[in-house]
Amino acid sequence: MFHSIDKPTVNDLISPYSRLADADRDVAVRYAPILQFDAAEPFLPLAVGYTLFRANGPSPSFPRQIRLDEPGQPPASLAIEYAIWWDWDIEHLYELEHAWVYLDDAGQVIRAEASWHGRLHDMSVETGLPLTGERLTLYSEPGKHAFAPTTTWFEQRKEKTERACTRLAGCDGLLVTRLFEGLIRSKTPPANRLAHTYLEQRAFRPTWAFTQVYPIPKEALVPWPALFDWIPGRLAWWVAELEQTIPPHERRFLRIAHRGASAYAPENTLAAIHKAAELGADMVELDVQVSADGVPIIIHDLDLSRLNGSSASVARQNLADLKRIDAGGGETIPTLTEAIEACLAHDLGLYLELKSGPAIEAVAEQIRQQRLYNQVIVTSFRPDWLAQLKRLEPKIDTSILFGAVQLDPVALAQSIGAAYVHPAWENQAPEPHKLLTPAWLSRVRAAGLGLICWHEERPAEIAALRQLGVDGICSDAPDLLILGGEL
Image 1 (cartoon, rainbow, N blue to C red):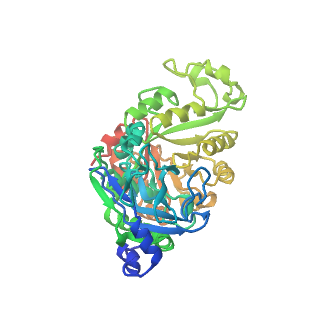
Image 2 (cartoon, rainbow, N blue to C red; image 1 turned 90 degrees about the vertical axis):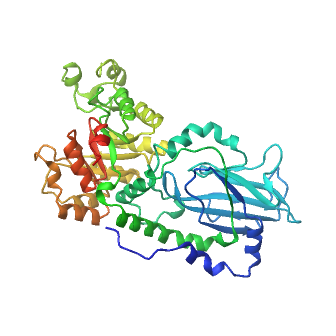
């Protein structure tokens, strides 16, 4: 799928500027921040793009305006923006963080800001700016690299940071921010699995001792436009390199709990979601319909016969009536909102199957409102429903389910803009993985499509699917996806 390409090295990026006599670069070098990293931090910056502002204007690399005359702040005559590049954040391929240094007419640093999880903050503390001589000195959050003037800023996020650096390492795959939309074309489901594999192998537990000191060196500084032009090629090279060096059977597939951990708890319930998290799932597959009063709910069957023996249609019941039904073990039928909240509390993604037409708009709205684009895949046997969903919200990844072995998966997926194909062949052969022939797999991979497979509870079949390098496997017993997936 990925062609071998020349490696865009950091030296190729910086060498044209290393001996350049340039006044702006000299200023950027003089005030370049000093960064302090956790002792166990595996990733240090590779390059830094700088931009100088002598008047108010938009940042070229961060969604903000640079104001030299910020109300309530001392006026500045110059601002220096540092766009700091890493190949890796512990959760995803590529990282870009920022620091801003403001100078007065005398060349004194009078204020400073830095990025913090998509936002920015003033770096002043009670004792003033954290300076070492003229250089802003910042702490970098382990694995995630957000900047702070003091380590106390990390205390409230400590548990979340440690999860990111351990259990969630690599979970976001290749991240494409708005800055690079349309420019980074190497993001595909297989590329996400490669990045996940690479980063999971580099998971670490922070020491919270910031003993790695990195004064940004002159050699790392380049004008921002040069760094911006270099980044897409660097990412394409990384994806091609990982594809060449990580064999299919070693790639980390998504462990998807089918209807939650439904082998151990009532299907499609909050209990099944909690159990899925306990057993190491990455995502939960849940079925979405809409009640008579317009509330999206989680239930598989279109009628209530398996729950209370009634032939009544789910779509004709109000939420209050549905909530009175025992979904098993005293559990109730959850709303989509409740299911999302439970999944987010456990760092679980959602694999949502549309079970009714009215669920299309409801699912799109929930994902849009909570900006869950990186945490959700929507699936259905109805290609028209997925096409409608993509029209409503093009950023949502979709997966097309189909049962016919003879169907062309690539043509089907491409016709509706799906990112994944999901053959539901579990009942058509004693060893369904054998239906995934080399030619079939080659066509799917060449199209950049991800491959998710049926719910499977046989360890030998799970291991065989892993050997093929699939991108995800559903199972009623998600613990088997860890145990049975190990070769």
